[in-house]
Length: 149
Image (tube, rainbow, N blue to C red; front, side, top):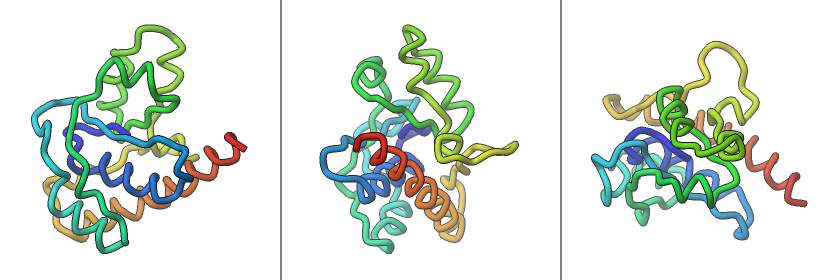
């Protein structure tokens, strides 16, 4: 899961997807910038996750690395800007094929396949983002568990 600073959308998506997958899956998150490196997720994200029974307090922000492109089978980007930055890091077509827009991977279609960044928003928008992430993670988890069966 990749967003800009790795303190809002991607840590929430990481926590949600982990809660929907068997333990043998590895889920992580990162950001395209290192501004918040080492920080916990935003306190509003912590609160929203806790409200829904998910603990993301142990997560720490980190920037995405070339190692991530080698290690992970799927890399889900929260918006087009993040997607373009991550794609630019890919060394070959095999790595590029791992990278996708998060909502597109969840089967969404249309003009807006970006997860809204709630950083400058109130709790209502954080709840909306949680709901979008939760629904998409349900679809992605189903696809991943069917594929691994």
